[in-house]
Image 1: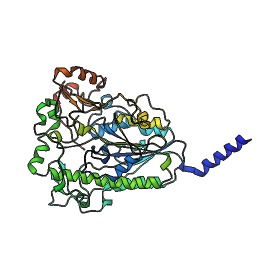
Image 2 (image 1 turned 90 degrees about the vertical axis):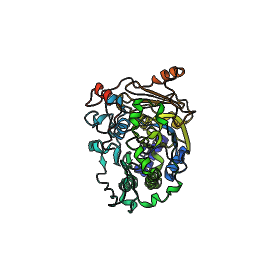
Image 3 (image 1 turned 135 degrees about the vertical axis):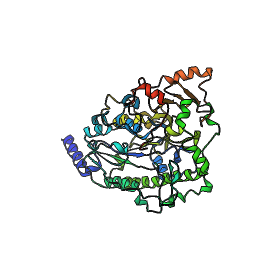
Image 4 (image 1 turned 45 degrees about the vertical axis):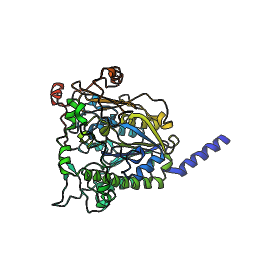
Length: 467
């Protein structure tokens, strides 16, 4: 009798809580575009102003050594959403449409919809050119356009586009993207939800209201670590990826290097503000105690290091990005994890935490153990691929790069965090290279639409279309 009464009471309680306590945790899935490690919790760039990223860091566990699957928007996002690396899918570049190659039922969205979640979102989760509306129960269609740089005003240096705008904060699309997430958090949901919010910034163009530029006076800007002859020990395949003549040499000639960094910092600060608006709504919502937050960047960004701008390389600046988790009952506030992971962990970690079967095709590994204990034993590296047969393996102590033509780089990250001394040609490091090479992908799918022979001849040429 008492057992029956207790069961009835529990059912009544569940009914009174309604949408605030779905049987499985909700997921707030936050993506940021082109954001490198210039976020407060990393602790190595005092110039950056990221109070809301720092606020999120205080809420849970943040990773200092988290690496993208690919240093390009489309391959990176396709890999983490499908659970399959570029070396499996052939999605190596921005101009490869992943949709004919990977069916919707293999995606992270499908895993959650099949588990009864309401899957919805806004902004940039996949590469913009290849949205697949059928994957979502609802998706924001109209974000609004960007205000233009006034005629006669400089819009940057060559392909590096930056300029302050005399406009309002709500005239940049990220405002509407955040608004969508805010509105969802204010609604009553009758089943668990997966809410994706994909911010465009700090992707170029670095055009945000002037007040954000004013936070970073040009005279106070400090250049990143830079070595004039940094490319002297880089093999030809690596130099071809760097393309110093494309962006860095024009930037040096312009004398506007500090202005470009100011603009990047301003755009980060603008995005941080919108993240803060979203977090405000989250903390006021009925879902704050039963929602997992996962924030990730698709890859990093160079701002002149190794004579390079943009992503498109296998070095530290292009491959590292923020990675932050808040998991009720698991993560502890304000904890840092220095273990080396990559973003292939996102899919299996979310399914693991939410009690959803992880599909057999998934190539990632759950980091649940690290979320529970950031100091837990961990022996897996981060692995990043850029185009056909170009890979890097990153452990806490080492970075090993092998290019398609056999060129190599090896860096001792403990002694050389700027990756200024390539040790790959030194015979005493042969065993180290072999040890790291064990983690390279076991197979390399041919590049879509290009034979392996043509790819070898193409070397490191970049396709920056629709960056």
